[in-house]
Image (cartoon, rainbow, N blue to C red):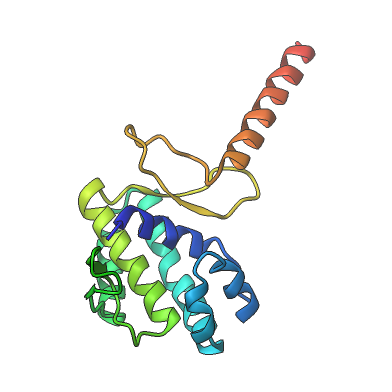
Length: 175
């Protein structure tokens, strides 16, 4: 299992507005095999999960390790993960975090929780963040070597850098 990818998928899930099944289909555009089984119950379950998961990122961003661990553990109890060995390619046996009968929402929730739990154990509980860009409420996973990430995307980073540059230019012109 690629736990970093699962953790990053958890952040992407939080950053996605899910008003309906079409939005979830768009979010899963690279996972077409899930489309036929997706239904409105998945949307509702994932909307609830988004609300429950955001405090993990907020606590991590604030350096509240105990809150990160406690909240993740509570979510793992609420959403038990059932890992299975996948044999759909006999030459590439690998682990899946949910069985084949799992709903789309169960699969996404399981991947998110296992990815975040492993990331917290391997890299630390303060590797999840909130974008520091003005007017952005997205989250991110920080896998940088020196834990220096502050923005959810290059776009937000660029906007913040341009705004800071313009502010310095304005201040220099005023003095």
